[in-house]
Length: 214
Image (cartoon, rainbow, N blue to C red):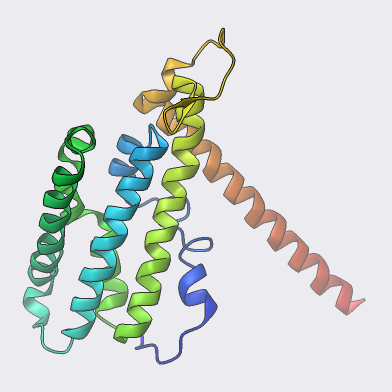
């Protein structure tokens, strides 16, 4: 990827829709499926990952011309680890229950393929400002994916949303939705929706082009 000098709307929004790490690239699925059982977990993990993603990418982009190619991955992990430690201590200070709910997944942010992938594919090859905008888009895209997965899983699995009951009293909850199987089912559902929109969009474009020749 050649260094990007101009910043467009696609620099940000493309990471949310066209190049969504979860629904399009199928990356970072381990923490995605593990913590997307409730809206609160999704928002917390999304915010934590976005913070680490933006901060680490900014540092890596700033130092991209000084990091030797032979040790770049090690350097990336060291930078990412610094910000993960900050998140770890802040989250423990804010809510021990939320911290316990995440288990090892906070520490695993260090090797989250989304963050490492962004560092390698974008931050190390683009300007600081462009990297910040793109990292924000990636973080928002990851958070959107978590929310799309967690909202139906929490409603159907627990009958709640943000801890408040949103279903009728005799509603029979689907316990499968708060298990890993439920996570895979919702992931498959959303991937099929995204693919359907892509095919429909491609079909419209082809139809329009065909009409021009007529």
